[in-house]
Image (cartoon, rainbow, N blue to C red; front, side, top):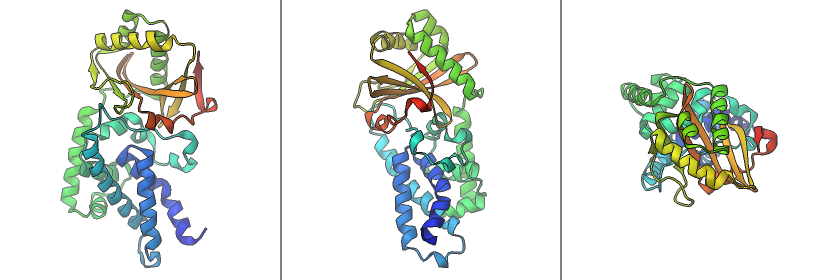
Length: 300
């Protein structure tokens, strides 16, 4: 490996982490890194005072341009749009760098509340620890403008955050309770799991059957999942697996060898406040590589 390639690979985890948080899909993040690599390969790197700053700047601006286009496309998306998890087998060990809460699917969805410019400024400052002056230089704006974007982003995210933080083991316990209730569906038992204002979001992309608008209320969610359990979970070829994706437990539902959905939840105390089901076949295809050996549990 030549020195130029080695230097790019050394910074790749940070660049990928930034692009993925900006865009919410691994494929788009990889496309951004490919474009950044082409520009890096054409660059006289010996003339650069700070190669990392150059790479972060190029990656951020490429991701920002792609996110602006994606925002326009998502406005015409059929039904809700959900972020796509990272595939465990495709991840590199160093990609664990700078993870924590900011890589979870729930947080990636929360970032959708922000404009592209706010998202870039927030991630650079709050997640990747660049000062307002450094982030402003990367974005090509004045420092005061960067500070304002970060402030607006914090405010928007604060409004959307759960009132109480729930750890991974608690989410896994609640996810298991949800699965047990689905095995023997009972309207009252399911309703007791949900908070009064609980919401269900499903991303089918207009390709497969899914709820086209967020469904809200414990009664409505209980009826929805009673129907799903009766029609789906009673099938003999259905297999359920819990895996950890992006640092949180996710329920994978398989029909034979086909991955039908990936569902994660948000909780508050002993109640589920949100269910988020990824059903888009294109997004699930990349997750189907998850094997039993990566599972936290296999449920029959």
